[in-house]
Image 1 (cartoon, helix red, strand yellow):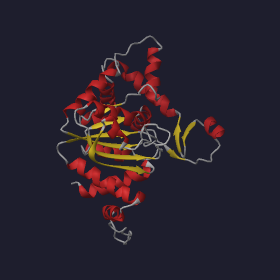
Image 2 (cartoon, helix red, strand yellow):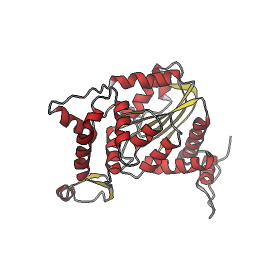
Image 3 (tube, helix red, strand yellow):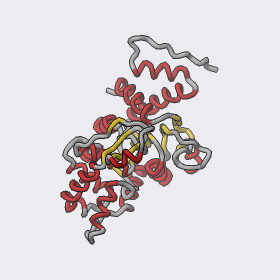
Image 4 (cartoon, one colour):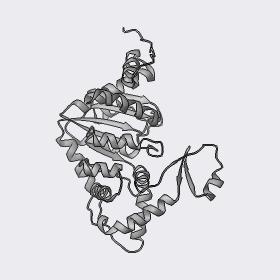
Length: 305
């Protein structure tokens, strides 16, 4: 048996060196975070591996937007699947709006009167929706004929005036999937046009074929999940239908496995479904994604040139 190595902190310690020492501790959350970085590094460096990134939860309101864009622009991931909420918050920032530091103890009734929506401690002005409504209306004719959600989002990225998740995916030709796009502010904006008898040609099922094709033709596959929900399951079901199961896996979640939901399901559960290879390298890290993501990314930046 290996002994638990205690983490020693020096004044000049880099993030990568800290993570290496955490990995050498080898147990509990400290060891799992170190293992998560090692597995991410290996799958990104594996030229035969397609890396599928699943994003859920308040990552943009939580300050993770620049890291996500960097991951895409570095081409460390090959496929991105996320929620409509993530892309709504992202578009709002790309249009010049901001999220603000608030408090979980604030008076929500007063906040509502002042025109702010609360995501725990992060505050979003309602004016974001006004700006998005104008932007979607201005560009509706360019968006309405896109056959798939991925193509819709790429076009949205092309039209977006500033750096964004959508724009990074479009410019780097990284497939961006959002199967629950209707469950979001962007979805509501499009519904508003449908309610005025306008038509949209976008079909949700078109994306299924594309993500399954990517999984099917991949020599190897790796999955990275920050949060769970629809993005995680969308990737997992593509792995299930592919002839080769995922060989790498990292999951960062705060959810528990006992209720049986996808968000808390351990990656090893996917072995029973044919989603995760029994010989895969994988780790479940129980941690707030807004804590784990900056540490993982900072360590990877030191390791991957």
